[in-house]
Length: 128
Length: 469
Image (tube, rainbow over all chains, first blue to last red; front, side, top):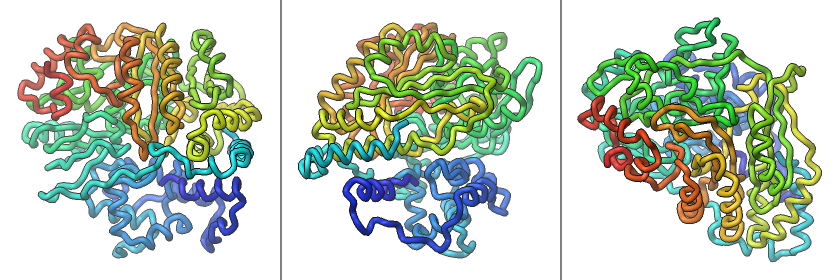
């Protein structure tokens, strides 16, 4: 996902000195190197899902430089997960901000997308 | 590219100078960012939406497949509903992929299958994504001659659309292909090289997925090399004047003209034995967001935008990185956009770029993405935009949430007038008769295609307009 909303907030804060622009501190914020190392190494346990993940999702969600929420990073994923799986699934299939449609995984079924979203968000396998 | 802090400072200064009038309320209509409406997730038959990277191409394929072997793909092609279209990462902006028939992902046909250390060759499955390919080739001490700007595409998609890097002596990716295996419409598997099925080799090396599905290619690579990459900001007019010298002096050279600033970024790279100096956190995408911010705030007043950018850019030192080429020359590019890119005769590239810059700065203050100028060596593939022609490319981008009609209305006429051939995967309005006029061997290529696919199994609606005259 692109960081546009955050960037816009930072820009407005810097230029116009707006108050109240600080991001809410997250209890789960972690050092960037920890986030990057975990994102780069995480793989789904299921072999087929791992193959789909490696071919597509990991290209962005395994690399914080891409701007996508890193896999396993709750500080980035929890606000998204709070929108509900159907919303995230819709953004995945149709694309949203920096997220390209289908997550560039065109071998994925809707169930695959659901499982991959849960995996990256660190949500239980039956969560929805 | 830009220092965010200095850019903000300059923007802030300029904002104060213009008071509230420039602070957004007067933004032109066309600069408004509108998330494109998402089509339904499924169609009336329950088929799942496919959409390209930028969101402007859509389809609801009746069947999706991701075969796990070449044999499985061949069996699929025999009986699957047409049109059968292969998809990689969906990075094409033209209608190459959309199909109501069968969408084939080659994600399960990926990786290096064999390599030759002495000849510096590697045989690679075409579902391999370019980012993964760079790393895999490095593991065997090799690298491709050309590295495209974006690392997300599949090798098959990149080859099939004539995707390229930059460098006056470097051909596009397909220039490194010395043989390939093609699954044809009747399920046969054909091997083609300059010595075997030569017509198929020359016709289908850049094949748009219209000749069949290429599953595997053997690449002529070179020894993995460390490079020193440098980015400097310079006045645009000086850079454009110096372009012939820049191209001649460096292994890779490219220009990013930053519209409404009078400034361009020049990126060059050359082999180096210097100690590794990693590229560090990506600053280029943030820089583009900063340019967007300048557009948002000062867009309606280009003169002020130029002053603000000049103040910001004046303090930016050169950016230098030293590392393996595949790590430095391909990029993430998470900001989505739509793009038009034409490949022109090398001698007309700069004149065309100057005209485009002038017309965009005169008529479209909503544009903020830099224009990209690259250079590509000639090759012999019949449908290559670089066929027997050393070329200079000009690429113009529009943020995916913004109107891109100006690419057709203002930019394309200039590119066509200067003899350009469009990138096969990027926006253009050309059809079969236009391509026949631009490509000396176009009709020969189409004869080969017709022999391989007489039932038009691989042609979707768009391709029928492109290849059938």
